[in-house]
Amino acid sequence: MREEHRLIKGLVYRVIRRHIAGSTLKSALEEVGKLNVSGASATLTFLNETVPDTLKAKYNSNTYVHMIKQLSRLHMNCSVSARLSQLGFGVSEECAERCLSGMLDAAAKSSVRVWIEAGRGVGQDKLIEVYEKHIEDSDILGIEVSVNNMRYMKKLGGIIKKGAPVRLTRNPYFFSDLQSERKNMKECLDSYAASIKELSQSKAEICIQESDDKLVSKVSGMIKRNRRDLIFGIPFGYSFKKINKLLKMKMKVDVYVPYGQDWIPYAIYGLAGNRFRRIAMAVLDREKQV
Image 1 (spheres, rainbow, N blue to C red):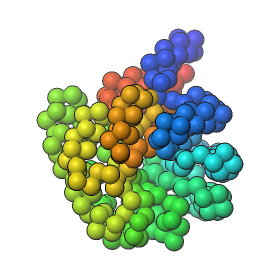
Image 2 (tube, rainbow, N blue to C red; image 1 turned 45 degrees about the horizontal axis):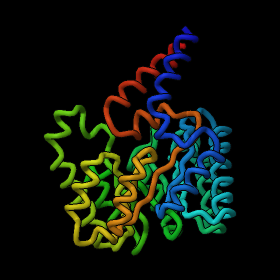
Image 3 (spheres, rainbow, N blue to C red; image 1 turned 135 degrees about the vertical axis):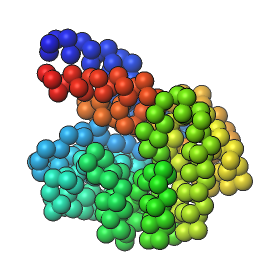
Image 4 (cartoon, helix red, strand yellow; image 1 turned 135 degrees about the horizontal axis):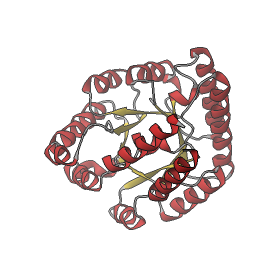
């Protein structure tokens, strides 16, 4: 059974590997360098989602601190993005706060932006609560928030500071299948439009994180007048041809670059397409059985 699982996991990785910048920081930095040369900025994240104890949380935090120092040393146009679940929120609040504070201290010294995301077992309410607690660090601290619930957007709009970075994304399960995806495209566009309008009042620096080609095009057309004021967040694996097309349109492009060996959760929650999620979830179920 273990051998069968290993083979299946290997086959699935071959399908999605273009979306992962290798398993080491070195390989990820090489990809970031290529993106910077093309004119795009990048956001680097470490794929290590399972955090059963404070020891693993500290390991993840130290990894991010090392990442921040390397980006500064190499003068790369790149930020880092960490899920609160990686830092131990849900395991130990005290430890998690220390981990996050250590990252922010390193980021402040290195002038590298840190994004925070929710993560498995850590919801949007907790995310905004943590962000508000560290609101004084908003010059280097960004937050990723879902556009699928305006309650969170209004709450964030009430506390955010002028010019603070916000990354808008949609819940990966917003569309359950291809038929409903076509049917609800307008609803998704309306969610982006309402979120942008809400945050524009605070003059936030807005990044739209979207992996669907059609949605990128439609959002760009929808906000044609001020699209040059926005940043378009594109997942790693998106074709360079399409990235260059956005850059030629004088649009700001930031590529979300994941690396590491714990890629299954990212394949489930981060990649576009329900096919990827179904395959990855099947592998994860098999892993639990093994």
